Image (cartoon, rainbow, N blue to C red; front, side):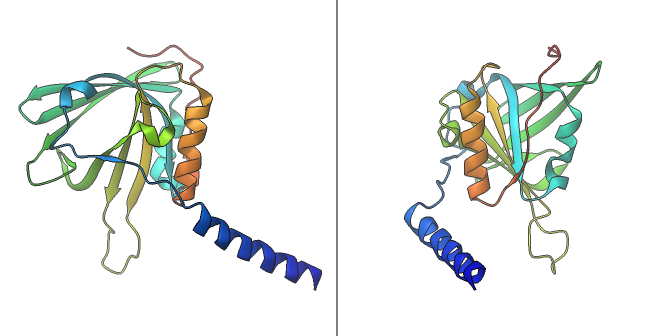
Length: 190
């Protein structure tokens, strides 16, 4: 009886807490209207969060990652990742197009994927950015997206651990409780 009463109390408390202190919502940066120049350059990958392990599993293999964003043509950005996996350096590039009728970027080869930028203030970091990737359900009978993850990037490698903690807490509030942070024990591949 006491366990049941305690369970009900915790349930009601959690409902009241969510009503009183709802999740903070990140500020979306509309890629068609922001100054792209301010986002060019080097970004260090600090963490990823999702609803499912499958969405972030590939990040677990890397010790560290650093990305460079370059503008190659009008409304075209190239993201080049230098990733450390064990003793090896892996380099890969992705091309994104900015279209005037969309608020997200279109990735070459994956036009169905939404690629969104969010302000780093959501992680309490002015020199950070949150990148979100979302893909629609694979089948019409599926209830959730087939991919949905937030990734935190910082201009400097040595950001406060509190920034990552804030990012993970805000992600968890949005039910993205599975996360990964790279150990960064080895030299960066730059």
